[in-house]
Length: 68
Image 1 (tube, rainbow, N blue to C red):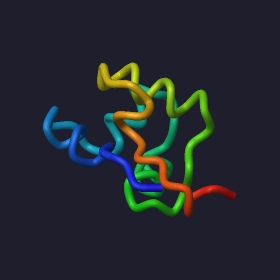
Image 2 (image 1 turned 180 degrees about the vertical axis):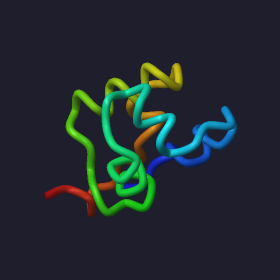
Image 3 (image 1 turned 45 degrees about the vertical axis):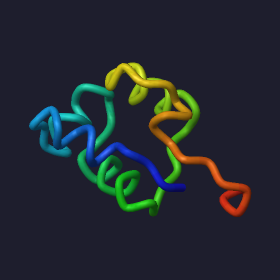
């Protein structure tokens, strides 16, 4: 699933580690989300969207082909 996590994180001048600390996950988890290797749980998606002050749909780009 494509997302805007990296762009928004960089706009705030945060490292992956700093963002992870703010939402309670590891730097590796943030990296995996940014690169599309990991789809976050709904709760982590919520926490990230809330942190960036955007909707979940505004942060994560859902496409029919992404359905599992």
